[in-house]
Length: 422
Image (cartoon, rainbow, N blue to C red; front, side):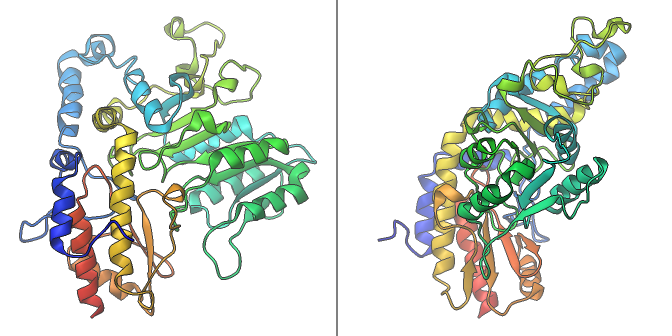
């Protein structure tokens, strides 16, 4: 028996009993031309702006205006160690130890820098495994790494594919790949929450499998960070990367994050590209010292970071720190479960949800296929005041984000979809 009911009154009741309901008012919700809140279900693409973001950024603009270069040490939040102000909060979000986490660069840049260290091909062991429908930039990045090392990017890439007629991936098929090709594979690099289906992978299981066969294992957590509990330290993964502009609400093109497991923290033999921000903080400005690498994830930094972007990330992380991933995930499961329940009322002959039904295998995103529909349906949904996103060939991705989406958002979205379908 379902714990959910149909009807607007039930949605209102859920909102009244939601202990996180007040956080919605801490975000700027886009409005339509009549001044009504838009139903924003696109946090999987770009998260909404916290109302505190402007003051966090303005603080740095003020300090830059009044202090100039002295802001590096004299600003209210000194710029020299600014990235450190984010570390503890970010570590909690991704389930890591502070020494394992750094906020730097952008997502694909971080992926390349991680592969410099953790993709170590030999003539015999050089192949890379990714999921067949990985986010395109991941595929482009690993193909270019294969070419960079002198390998054929088609022969060197092994795709973990869903079975014929299915969208979701089976671990047994990945196990078969490793049984057959394990001694040829140097790296497994999976998007931990698939962008298209929303399937959240068991990273611990994949890491154990890869390590058993002598492979390095990394994850792109772009669709996982701030959405699901990643437990990166416990997963045992060698590295992970993620962006902060989706569920972490840091603004378009904002800085990304990287994780390097603590067992690599003091390994100075790992190949890497270096820059002065990965050098010993005490002697960094002496300029003429030989390179002296920082331990942990900080040792992968290259340049001093853009403070204005860090300030925006910090504004959002302070909210995450206050709420905690446990409460966020609890609401997320309930909100997404309610959304799923309402969509199923439309009938299986109309709607198909390709995201896993098991809450352990997904975050807040549901990927919906509407029978016999094309992008015209999505366009009508957008015109009705629902912001979601379209992925070819026939999927509408909707992400009810627990920090700022309400149960009524979800209810109203399904009502509008119903009206369009009828």
